[in-house]
Image (cartoon, rainbow, N blue to C red; front, side):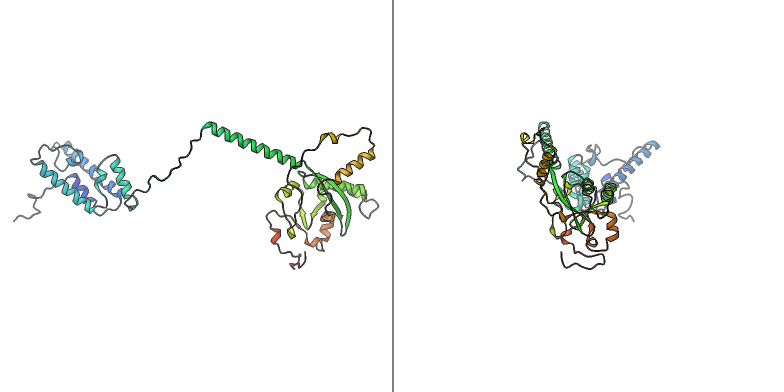
Length: 353
């Protein structure tokens, strides 16, 4: 007795859509569906090629589904009935799959399916923001050139102001320190000078004044090198390679919230050139008096001289364990001296400033 699965009643060949439906049941990713479909189409083409090469003609199984190619079937006896059957098959396949048959179409439909099922969100990721009312202005070459010219003007103005500040003269009153303060007088420098320039000028002042207890103190100061001298501003040792401008422009503060170099960071007003003319008939003494008067009128001339100490480094190495050298510390640009708890070398906290 024949059964429903008998080959006389059940077709041994499957259409393209049936093969795709049977091999893609349960898939959840669009990439897997595309891969399986490509394998089915490749297998059908291979079977058709083998059948043609054997001379047996193209079997029904190798014939692509005409619903996908759009070519009408001339052997169909009832076109409407076949169309209804294929529509039912497609509907059944779409209920088994996690995505529709939009992949069988071309162009925009395939892209729509990708957007619809990408990320399993059911909607496209990105949409145009129709609420944006401000349209960005197109930047033309002339606008870019104009902006570049404006930036160049500002850059040059900044450099000019900075050079004017750097070339401004200031006066620094100081003392020589060897356990006690020895008056040193005034040194005239520019805001853009390095610390070692000030130390070199102070060394010459020490040689002229003969600072020291030895009889040949002038000779000693004349032979001392800049590397053997230290600048101590308050309790901070200022390294030689820094410019005064660094501390002036940044308003750098030391312990007790005190500015290390309290000078203006703005360019001075232009001088009247007519008053700066030198009288050729003036004597050397009058010129020296005028220079001294001019120096005493410079910014910083009235500062406390004991705040700036010029120290022989060799003396410091011998006495750095003794107060006040024991509380001196080298300048660190990353350190916040305002919040620092001051301690001596033994770790003891100072309760006075």
